Image (cartoon, rainbow, N blue to C red; front, side):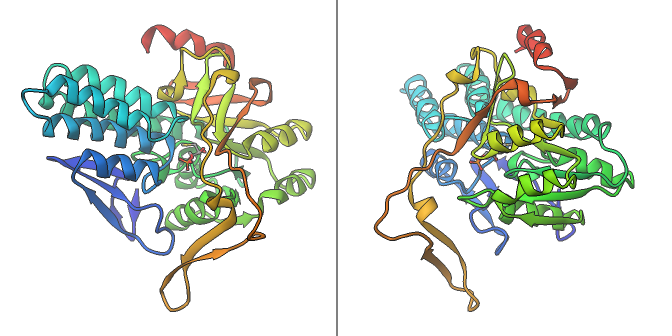
Length: 347
Ligand code: MRU
């Protein structure tokens, strides 16, 4: 990815410090934060300084490597075990986080240096998978296609490239002129804030639409295809993604619009038989009742946007049954739900 012409990764690690783009400040301010302890890293995952399944995965792997490097010699095994638990309790839904802690923990049992290398390998595998997702997904994009997306599954949601947006970037590079409808994605606005900002950086033409406007555009035949990301995919193809995905998929199905999931296989939970088993995160009601951003004077403000004495309830994800999904754009090609299980022995 390039921001203002300079190359970045969403999350990276050097020595004992983890660096990440602070996504809570985007699109108003571009800032890299440096995290020097396990506690700081866990807090950054939980408060969504870093967010998006792939980026959370890399951050989790780096956080465990950081804990291993900082653990005492006497209590090393106990400390890395506790660190793994702490990281895994930050956010429950994205499978990539658990894939990363599992992978890095095995290496950490050997040595902190091995953990450090494993965390980098995991992040690099995420980059490579997303690059291939871009190439594979481009094959279903035709000239001047209008593609809708929900939430942010671009490079901000991964270490680099992204999943749902990677095919669009590839198609744009090849001169196919894709156009993107961006669901705003309440309550946190990952579409309006992050996807729109990313598409601007990549010079991809787009419009932000209200979450409840997607059916309007689908009914008018203005959306040719949906591509969204995934936080966890069950072995039968049921897919957890940002809240609101389910209703978009059902409406797309009704109008005969293909609805694709783009995700690396590190998002598939091979122990999960169906979507009913996917744990769903509930976040603070404040995300619904308040909105925040910079005012015209450049001061960060939080404002109330709902009836102040009402309470809210805030599931962060929903599960789309496989029957609504046209295919899974992965690093191994475009797969059907039935194909997913074939990859089980490798993971
Ligand atoms: O709560 P977030 O922003 O971490 O949500 C995760 C997501 O970004 C989405 O659900 C996304 O579409 C899939 S993650 C690549």
